[in-house]
Figure 1: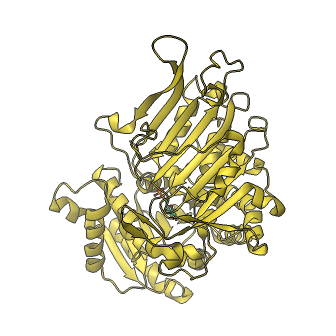
Figure 2 (figure 1 turned 120 degrees about the vertical axis):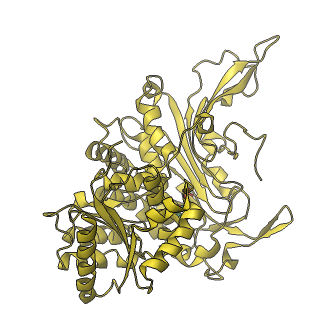
Figure 3 (figure 1 turned 90 degrees about the vertical axis):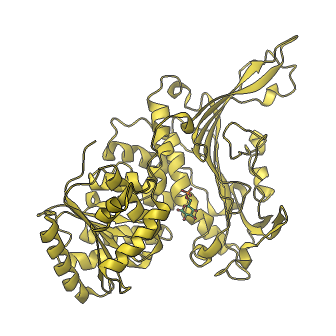
Length: 508
Ligand code: BG6
């Protein structure tokens, strides 16, 4: 595999959780697989007064807990830790960037990294416009001597206006091709496999349109509540936290046209076209198409589950949604009239993300005496996580007299692949940025198009408090009202932890 050019990965917010749990462990995984260049270093930045040694000690713990690969030996880990450096300064203060610049240049000199720098913003979002502007003041954005890339974490804006403003602010100092907006869902192996399933197989693509697809269903459920993230979640809610980014991205990958090539421009052109074709849900239609819910206290297997309003950092009368179910349409040639249903929530029965393509039934029902046959859709289930795999459900004759039909499964599980290493999302995305490949990163226009779709829903919820926030007991599949959304297609699929276990081995 091609190795990235020499460089320094500069992490703003290096004393935070993301660096500890995801970023440095993923860089270690790359190191373990020999995918890092010889000349390489990580420079952690933050206000916390850590020295190199204390930073390395903390990161060692993070690697041991969260890296996908376990260090082969203490020496291997130590050799990696020597590549980590830390510099404490107040990243809000423009004047302090002079000291930081000196530090970065001397590290560049020491490691001979050719002035190639990647800046990772693992900070609170309020710093996203500030840091790039300060970097630019000190010419640290210029790519005349080595590349300069900027990785921005979500949330990318709070609504359409703030997302547009943020894009505008970033573009004042960095060019679009230097900006890498991360959505970790695109880093997931199984999400990328959606493209391969669609575009490398002759059998699916001819059916992948309004003529054969009855509806598309996407679920991303979590069995845990917000836990200690109440403070952040209160200002976000499920629509901003999951739908605006991850779920609309999954829908775009399902719906997009085949790109001309797998490259940043082609891929992202197709994604943005889908997002621009989403039929807007007008403020006055929100109640009809979108259901919001919030988990209430319950008891599961004798264990008390707290209500969202009892979680730390959450207001006692909070109306923040922890569940969203939605029906929408994509107004284009391929998808005209095909409903898309998406659903996400915290404190649901199990942790599952999956996409289900429900195909239309046969035009003439030969076996109509089977009482279930009228409702039977062939289903293709693309399981993102867990029990990653693909499942095709189709009808088979029950052996014996008559023509009774029963659904059977044809399934593939990643776990059946021997000796196959599934890289983590952050590992894949970091490597891509190091290689200068933005294919799996979001482009500014796509982020704005997704906000444009979500914005009227946010406005309706804000301006019309009469739109209900439905309660649902923690550990259930969300408010009953979300069932009414799928009336036309009878029911949601209720996925289990096991891809093919359908109802038999459900984790409750
Ligand atoms: C994050 C959200 O973007 O995605 C979290 O902020 C959510 O609230 C997480 O839990 C889900 O990611 P994954 O990879 O566990 O499905």
